[in-house]
Image (cartoon, rainbow, N blue to C red; front, side, top):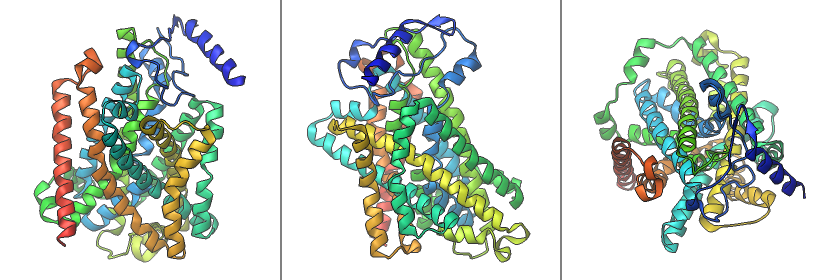
Length: 471
């Protein structure tokens, strides 16, 4: 009853005036009668029609933060810090290129959702055979599980470091944080966006503070932004880590998520100007937030290089990083327990914010590919259980051994890089299709840049796989 009443109120609001103008809610015939993506929040947020640029941008600000947390989740931490500790600033150019690729892909993802009223999962299932649809769904679900592994392990270890919980207990607690998302959804999507943005700010300021204390050599950092592809291709360990950074930075599930939450703002798809405006401000929000994610990832690598390069310290684990920050023999005079605690707090913030977006993406993928319609709480719990079960099994087999469990992290990020083209190819195809996108199809330079990036990533992944199997 309450849900029907809310819908009636929303419909009345959409039909009325907002911020000096009117917002008309209608959907083009191309959307048909299909179930809306994230139906409980789809088109639920009103936007001003005749406000200034910054007020309008503020109304569209939010989805970008949810997208950005996927680009700074705990999976990024190990790969980026390890990249700095092993190769100093050489791999910072990989972060730059990955971030630019992310901006391009997320803009295309948002465009797809806004123009068609369907998310990437719905569109892929609709336009592929049943067998191919199932294959892509399996790959995407595995990518979600790989993403969640990093979030679950990161949150579990953060709870262990902060409160002394055994790791297995911390992992089990993370299984129930999905219930937090259900509470937040009841409060409204804007509340979720605000909470996630706050967690992102915590991560940013913690690492900015720690990097300032580390006093890195700025000219070396700037030189690191110049790519050295020859060095990557001839050095397989560096290539493996570079692909881990790509997999951790450009997340497949974020492409599905972006195509869905871009639809949370109300618009009239029959009105070209309304669609154009939604695309413009949604992409602006996305690029701003992804720039912050880029800064965080650079800070992670810079921290690894400034504090740990040449120390021969074992920094392949979160616990090692936590301990190293309070060890004066490794990081010198700046070492303190406070630095370690700030690291753990940022890790927990990262894990929890990523959990929210990962669970939403799991729902989008499950509904879009296999049309699974079950109660919301059961659906969110199911997507969480699918992700946490392998980690718990691994944890029990190795009796909570952090070193063994964290070995999953880098592998999971490399798998994400391998899975990425399976989301990129349909995305580029759909957004370049004039029959589907009309005047909003990709411009030629966007289309061919996206195809070039996809081809390069596929070749690098094949190179990596061959290298692994040939030793």
